Length: 141
Image (cartoon, rainbow, N blue to C red; front, side, top):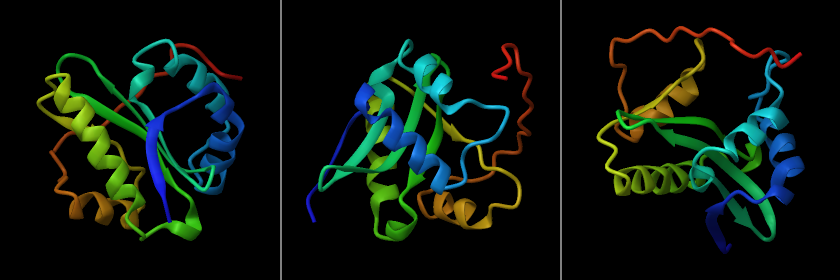
């Protein structure tokens, strides 16, 4: 089936949020619509979707800070997981980051999510000995 990777469009908002919910990526303390709006102000070309038959079936939100790239909200429609969409999407993310001169890319995986850790290991990612810490500066509630 024909598919294409493209940059996010505003009209993708509700289908993307619904996909993230189906994939278990949303959390009560993170408003996904606010996350989308914030991303659209910084490197919106690094917010990618995979479209198949007119529907958004995968997403990745990436950024590059001049030191390393980061990838968030990687989601693949549950019924299509294992079909290569995640690999296709991450290949495009990496290509776009590399074109910006990005020497290293990091992804964060929630603890206990072994299937996702195995996916990234197959793509050549490995634990790098760092522990992620976070601090919310602007609450979404």
